[in-house]
Length: 194
Image (tube, rainbow, N blue to C red; front, side):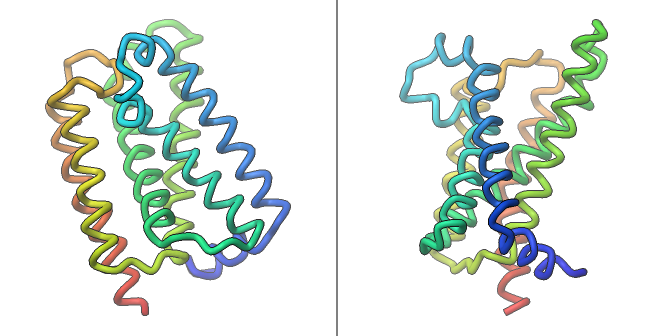
């Protein structure tokens, strides 16, 4: 089965859509809990750029609910949900791998493994949403600017997830490159397909 067929199968199943929407909504609240201390130490104006993964799953839940109710979904929203899920899923998987040595206690290792699989699921969700996107140049530029602005806030204004500085430069380069590659890859893939 190709990506388009898989996407149609998943987004055409109302029971699965609701299950996925609730799972992602639960993920949003788990993310809020995870970031709670950082949110309390930050201005509420910065929360939208602090909550990368939670925003990703919230956007995906919104898309699922809109599909369920057969509402017209703006292409920018689908594009944003897909790119965010892929980008922040991959970023977190990479961060878990890079910082695995910091998980010294068994409970932390279990949480690390759990987080790894949850964020791998985010990547899959973002990929499965790609066939539903009809990106144009305007949406592509807007999304590109949103992701780069988020990267700027993370790495130059300090809103990145609180992790040790050890691999921060590598993660910064990865994040900026991912913003470019993911957005333009989806744009090129979908425009060649259509």
